[in-house]
Every structure is written in structure tokens, then in C-alpha cells.
Length: 122
Image 1: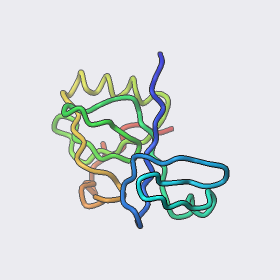
Image 2 (image 1 turned 180 degrees about the horizontal axis):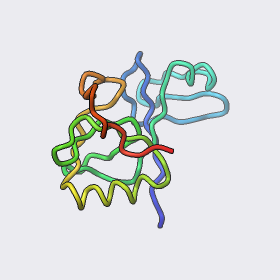
Image 3 (image 1 turned 45 degrees about the vertical axis):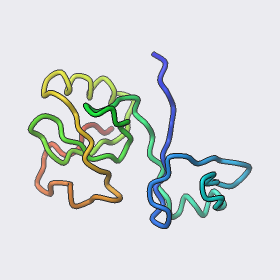
């Protein structure tokens, strides 16, 4: 199975940035021209990996996203190699997945007593 490998970088200072480049020892934001040393950036930025699935609205799903799956609300996506098949099975079992936010910008969407809150982890 060939999958597309993509990342998003969340920096509180810049918000969600879909495009960034790693050049030499820096992370560069092409749209703004800002760049940071890789080590420093990783101290205050979070990297989220694309899991090669899209929700019912064709939104790409990344590690750290908060989704609704059928009647389960506020579930958190945590990247793992077995995640793709697990989510595929859950989509068939419970219906469509819908991205409603991410853990960095929308922590209020996580249901505090949701035992089903983590889709998959090691």
C-alpha cells in the first residue's frame, strides 16, 4: 500500500501551517518567510502526520485531530501504523468520520469522560 506522507506543523505563534520545509537545520514557512532553528521550533511547535484518510467532507485527517465517528463525539486521532485499518473498520461499523477540530486549537471539543476518546495507540 502506497500512502502519501505529509505533515502539518502547529505553532501557537503562527497557527496551523500546512506548508513548511526543512532546509539545512531550519524549519521554514514559505508563505511568511519566517524560519526557526529546527531544535528551537520543535520545542514550541507540534508536528502532525497525515494518516492517509479523509473524512466525509474530504478533509484530510492528521494525528492530533478531533473527530466524530457515528455517535462517538470528541475522539482524538493518535498516529499508529495500525490506525488506518482500525479507522477503516470503524468507518464501516459506525458510519462516517467528521473532523471537528484539533487538540491544539480546540481542546474544549474533547469530551472529558469519553472512554472511547482515543482511536488507537500503542
